[in-house]
Amino acid sequence: MLDNVPVEMSIVLGSTHLPIRQLLKMGRGALIPLDCGYDDPTELYVNDQLVARGKIQVTGDRMSLEIAEVVRRSR
Image (tube, rainbow, N blue to C red; front, side, top):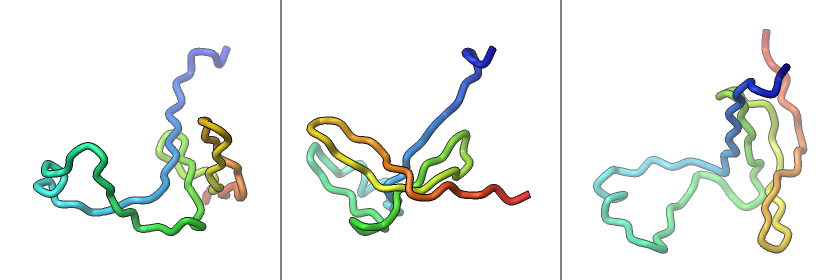
């Protein structure tokens, strides 16, 4: 019954503000600084709603998110 319900999931490592002219000048291998540090939590959004925070785990060539906190929804 729920097999065809679309769910969009996003994992946000950080963000930044960047002028479009600077973005257009970037080439392959360019680094974009983010507003977070290595130990800052990564945020998990489902359908544009923050649902959890966690930490990125890397094992070989695979990445995953270890959930550390489930965010309570405000009513």
